[in-house]
Image (cartoon, rainbow, N blue to C red; front, side):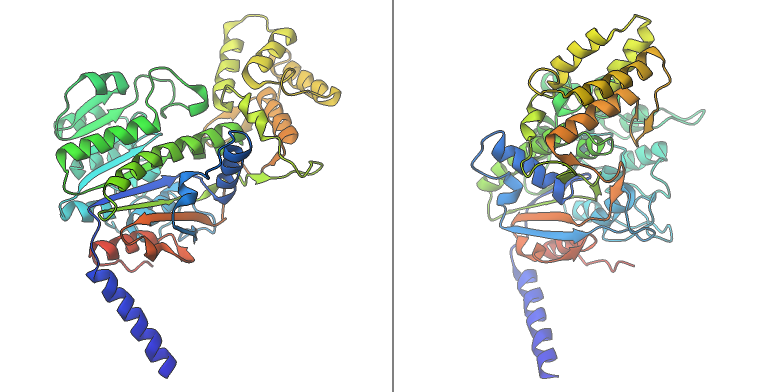
Length: 466
């Protein structure tokens, strides 16, 4: 009984200490979509062994490093909608639901609660701004694919800034299109970095990628000229919030393309996205260094994707991550280019494709190809481009031809990277933190506790998750 009394007393003292502590004026919430522990490990290994950096990734230098569970109310393995809802609101929900609890009752995100306390709000991502993770911070829908309804909630939110790829909602007959919905609500829509740099904006802004054949901003590895990048988006949000709400603000920045690369098992693109995410984090960290006593930064993930592992059957104890240095194209972009070649009607020869592999991936040049792998590539080439009966693999964001699949499987085997799935896993996700109140994020926790700890630090009533 005495031990229980002292435990309760210590807990009460901790809560009182937190409530009496200084509240952060500036909060940065970074979410790496699909960024489980293994992708972080492999990105850090690449950072050290290939790039030759003596310092770890920035997130790994934060004083708080812990892990969290990510299961949803309906499944052991969450999707991004349920995961995003947990991270935004502190409530578990069923897979597919967004901003509602498991009974489809609307729940409020920390972004709305901080706005009520006078914080400026920016929600940004490298994928579509009406996607699941960003949407969890401003919408309440029973299914994540209700894009038009999600955009209407975006307009009603009155948040200061949104940024990302492009909007996906289609207006019902007789209703205004999604851009008009936003402009009617007083938002200035800016297309691409050129317009951002050249035009003056209002107090409420939506920064979208310039016309592009996909809804996201383009993979880092593809280096698409004129497209937004996550660091550009992060800096733009920071600049805008410092202008319209300099006294206090909240930013959520999602590295959505980490997940997009992991779903089709594109290790090179995933590592480059994670490094790009860490580069974006540095912009917030530089701000923190100027405002150490007023800033909180949290980094986490909604779930792990792909089951990416360091090591494969028959591989050595050394990873050949240098192979990813020769990769100049994402798997998704390669699939698109191969489809365009097929549609062109031109005769595609193996000699042409072999040169393509040398240029884009380093195969047959920097990366030696064995006789058996050469034979496998030629067979896949024939099935895909000559016979046109190659098997396809369906992933969440792209359907892959046999030739593309076989090419990346061979690179992975040579490199020493393995995969367990093209979907999500139930693995723990990392939690890193620095700044005001960051000590609360120490230790094992559930994802619903993260927004509740932000609430506790900011003096907002915590939510009881079902």
